[in-house]
Picture 1 (cartoon, rainbow, N blue to C red):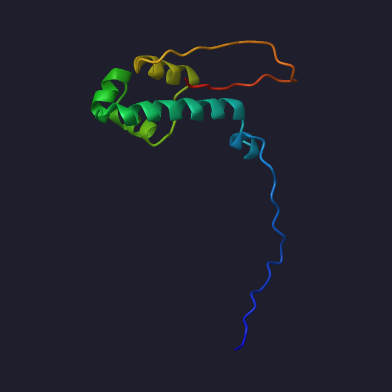
Picture 2 (picture 1 turned 60 degrees about the vertical axis):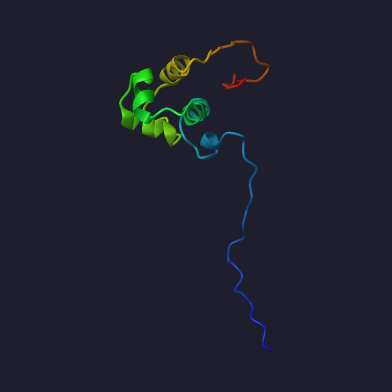
Length: 115
């Protein structure tokens, strides 16, 4: 039986450890803000998914059009600001707490902690 050999790739694969922020790793501007928006959107998505409400019902609660709810249901923050996403959370009966404290790092960080 004749064995087949695969052609080796001419380029070596490199694996790099991520920074913990995919938006920074991709070189996007404002990566901390983008990560914060993604985390807030995930919280909203989870609440919406578990609510059992229709997108039209949710739209009324959030004060937006149904297509914008559809974006949120697909984990897309779209053009929503961090502030607007926090307003959505409070409209969904969630408390949003902002804590500001000194850091030992050169630059502070943003985070979302869910209870």
